[in-house]
Amino acid sequence: MRFSQMHRIPLIATVMLMLSSGLHMRGFAQANPPQGVRNIVLVHGAWADGSCWSKVIALLQAKGLHVVAVQNPLTSLADDVAATKRIIALQDGPVMLVGHSYAGVVITEAGNDPKVVGLIYVAAFAPGVGESINSVSKPYPPAPLGSELRPDAQGFLTATRKGIAEDMAQDLPESEQRILAATQGQTAAAVFGATVTRAAWRSKPSWAVIAGNDRAIPPELEKDEAGTIKATSITLPANHLVMLSHPREVAELIEQAAAKAK
Image (tube, rainbow, N blue to C red; front, side, top):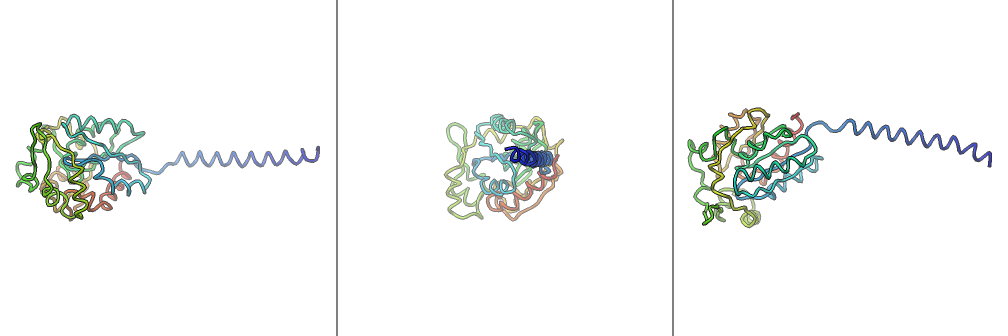
């Protein structure tokens, strides 16, 4: 027994040393997390829902980023900003805020949240203080999608199947176009006249994806606004739903922006 006990003491000491070394290494790993912003909040635009980000979400998650898509009610700008800020509040650190189309207005307003450290506009509007989609669109030729919107008695607009197929998703397969028509969110017409009260892009870095073949927003408008907000931008030969037709390029820009933002 005495011999066994004598050998047991060095063995226990060796095990304890190994455990303490392991704990020390784990502590070292936790103290050195990957650089850049890890939380990505995606905001969809009019006549859409959060599923329009599905391809981009998968690519960003594969890179280890934490991604959440907002489900905008599309009932008013105030309601959509509130929905976005609720998601921002749930994140455990700095946030990159990404908006498509009309959601460019939403992130311009919601992006003033102190957790937001960068804004990414994807085929989106980027109005300034006192501006709305209606006001910034006036100098440009009407987008073809406008003639394919149908109002209801409650003041909401629905895009026709033709509008989605030819003016929003013209470079996507017909099967995807049908799904987009079935899942579109009816959008209050009033959101297009709602004005920005404080533009987050004035104080936070911005990035932009310009859809060169856009038929829902004039590409010239996207390009001009990207210049106004001094966004780091790329132009893709894409339709309005560029995150579905070119998900890899969009995801790569988001990843690059998240790595640079502080």
